[in-house]
Length: 98
Image (cartoon, rainbow, N blue to C red; front, side):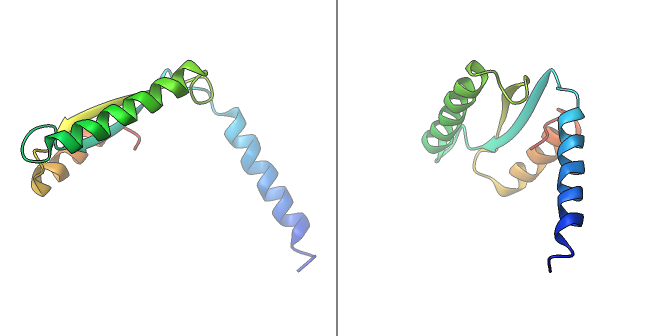
């Protein structure tokens, strides 16, 4: 087991170096599909507003590696099919990373 430790340390250091050398993006887009209308609109809007408040706090503290986080929310009206379509749009068209 101890013979693997040096190799693991090298891999961990190399991974850290790669992460540090990645240039910061101008903006990190987080996508969200939520029921902003319909029967669960109150819950969907509460979740969205809570997320926006948290992202604001992160951005005021300098963001993530200097990049600001933005939230892009699409209304899914609490419909599973629309939620899936929204996810595809957020990732493929809007550039959301999560």
